[in-house]
Amino acid sequence: MVKQRVATGAAWSSSLGTLLCLEMALVCLSDFEAYAKKHLSKAVWDFVAGGADECWTRDNNLMAYKRIYLRPRLLRDVSAVNTKTTILGTEISFPVGIAPTGFHKLFCPDGEQSTARAGAAMNTCYIASTYSTCSVEEIAAATPAGLRWFQLYIHRRRDLSEQLVRRMEASGFQALVVTADLPYTGKRREDMRNSLQFLSSMTLKNFEGAFEENDHSEYGLPRDSIDPSVSWKDIAWLKSLTHLPLIIKGILTKEDAELAVRHGVQGIIVSNHGGRQLDGVPATIDALVEVIAAVQGKVEVYLDGGIRTGSDLLKALAIGAKCVFIGRPAIWGLAYKGEEGLIQVLKILKNEFSLSMALAGCRNVSEIDQRLVRYSRL
Image (cartoon, rainbow, N blue to C red; front, side, top):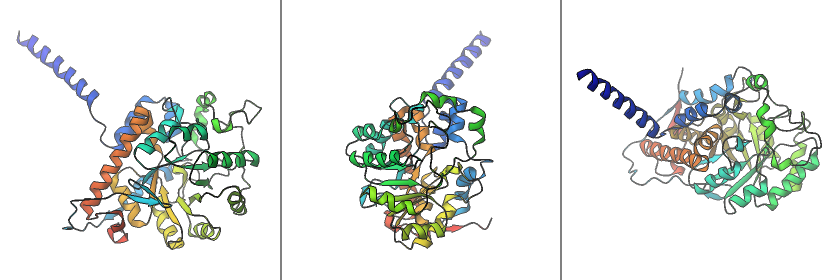
C-alpha cells in the first residue's frame, strides 16, 4: 500500500510538473528564443540564428551591453513613467521598432501581415523587408493606419528597385530604408552546410514574376542579383524616386555617418546586419558612440543588434539612439504564436523598459542621457 501511494504520488507529481511546464509563461525574450529553437527545424533555426564566419560579431552584439553600467538616480518621484517618443515626427508608444527581416511565412502562416499588425497594435514602427513573403500592397492592406517603413536592397536590375520604391510609396509607407552593408552576402557557414533548400518553397512576393529562370540559389533570388556597384552617388538617384524620408542602414563609422549627413539623409541605423556580414566589426552599441559624435544631432540615429532587455534599450538611448529595432526577437515571437507572440515580445520589452526607467530615475524619455551610463574597465 505504501509503495502504491508513493508511486501514485510520484506519477501525480510528474503530471503536475508537466502541466506547469506547459502552462509556464514566457517572461523574457530568452524564453521565446528557447521556444523557437525547439520548434523550428534545424535548418530554419540556423538560418535565423546564424552569423558570418566565426559569429564573433553576432555574439559581441550581446556581450557589449554587459560592459556598460547604469548610474541610477534616486528619489526622483517615478510614480508616473512615460515611454513615448517620436521618430521622424511620428509618435510611437516606446522606442522599439521591428527591424527588417525576410521570409516571415517560414515562422507563421500570415507572414509579414502578422508582423505589421503586431507593430500597429503596439503603436510602433515596422520596417518591411525587400525579401518579404507578402507584397508591399498586402502588408499595407493589413495595417492601413500603421507606421510602416520599407527596407530596400538595390538590385542589378535597377528597374525592379525603382518599381518597388514607387509601389511602396503608393501603398502608404512613410520612409525608405536603404541597406548599405550588403554588396555581397556574408559567408554564413551553417547556411552553406544546409543549402537553404527550404527557401525554394518561399515566394518573395515583391519580385513575383520578375525573373524568368526558376533559380532561388541565393536567399530566394537568382545568384548575384544584388548590385555591388552601389555607391554614394546612388543616394541622389533614390531621392529622385521618392519624396519620402531616406534612412541609411548599416553605418558603423564616423566617416560614413558624416557622408550620410552630407548626402541629405534623414536618419541612420547603426547596424552590422546582426553579425551576418563582415565578422570582426564592432558591436553596434559600441559603434553608436562614434556615430552619435559624428552627426552632432543633424539626423536621427537608430540602432539594431543585441537588444534583449529593457535595460539594454535604456543603455542604447542613454548613449544617443533615438529608437532601436529588433530582428531575431521579432522572429522568435512570430514562431511562438504569430501576431500574438510578437505582441507579447514587444509588451515584455516595453514593460521592462518602463521598469528600468523608473529604477534609474527617469520619468520620460527626454530625461535619458549619457550621464546615465559608464563603461566597465574590463
